Each structure stands twice: as C-alpha cells, then as structure tokens.
Length: 251
Image 1 (spheres, rainbow, N blue to C red):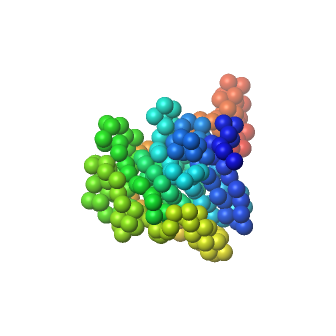
Image 2: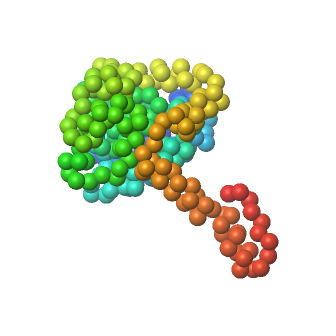
Image 3: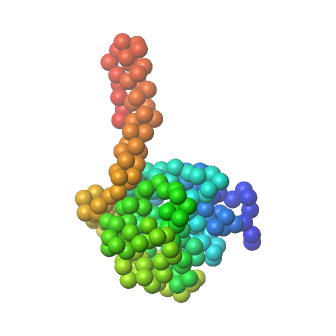
C-alpha cells in the first residue's frame, strides 16, 4: 500500500509497553517540516505522559530515517527535540536506515541508544550550504571532540561503521532488521524499573552530558513558553485587572 497524502506526518504505535514513533513522509525522505515537528513533539509528550515505558524513533520507508529539515518549510526544530523543546524522561532508541542527514543526526545525538542499518548514510552538511541552527554543537559532548568537529565543519558523510566506533550508535545490523533489533533492546529496557531508568536518564542528561548553547536556550524557551501559555498567567492577569487575589492552579 502506497503513502496517502492524508496520512499523519508522525505515527504512534504501542506494542507491549514500547512506543514505536515513525517519521511518516517517505516520499519526501521523511524531511521534517513544521507539521511533522509539531506532531513529533506531540508524540514525545504522549510517550512521557502515557503508560509506554520506552520509545523507538524510526522513519517510514527504506530510503531515509530523515533527510533533516524541509527547506521548503523550515521548522523550529528545537521544539521537537527531547531534552530541549520537550521533556522525555523515558528511554528513547533511534532505529535508523538510509539517509540520516542534518536534523536526523541531532535526533540520534539526543537519543539514549541507536541501532543503525548497515546502509545508513549519516551526514551533517549545513556548513556546506551556509546555514545552521547551532544545536549540533552538543555533539562534541557526546563523541570525541575532533570527530564531532570533522562531521560538523567539513560536512562529509561519516561511514556508519565509523559512527559505531566512536560511540554515536550502539549496533550496526543488516538493512531491514534495525527495527527488530531496536525492539529487542526496548523490551529489555521495558522490563527494568521505570523509576530507576527515569532517574538515571535525568542524572545523565541534566548534569553529566555537556549541552550546546542552543540546547540550553531551547530548554529555557520551552519553560518560558509554558508559563506564557498557562492558565495561571491568564488568572494572574485577570486577578490584577479585577483587583482580587489570584486563584492559581499550577497549570
């Protein structure tokens, strides 16, 4: 069955406590536009709030995990990045195949684990086109500094075996088996204590991993935006105008 234009840009499927979140624009190499960015943010929020214990992030089709930001509809990518625009305490596994470009590398960077098909083509070419949002700078805190700089500043493709050697991916598997391999890891994680998993992830992402300035700024923007959109803000303004004591609800 082919892709239909009315299909959602991101799909969410639960399987035994594991959420399979799929970037779903295969005809566009799963390029991330504004609608996909907001849908992906919503999927991560659903994972955080729901009963699923682990998330797998993958791409529809065989050609690409994602080709990165859609140049015809450039999104505010930080909004859908776990730990930046959206809170996600649960483990996230990236299962990637084919092109993994630009924003796709960022999604792999922030995932807790990554399983890559042997035919994965990983590159961050923004320096070649003179455009960057800067979030990739955090990669230098996840893999060796000079390897990260080579990927960012030169922009050439990194062989997937090299990505495995430097710790950007956990497994390299035959093409077509990456989702099964990710699911095997996810089931092991889902059987473990969720409070411990969440605590350790918060400790690592909160204090151990260095963050780039765009990651820090995006997280601050997320928190401020939450205040500005809150019911409490509306109540505070209304109580000021009505000269009464505010009745805040914490939401």
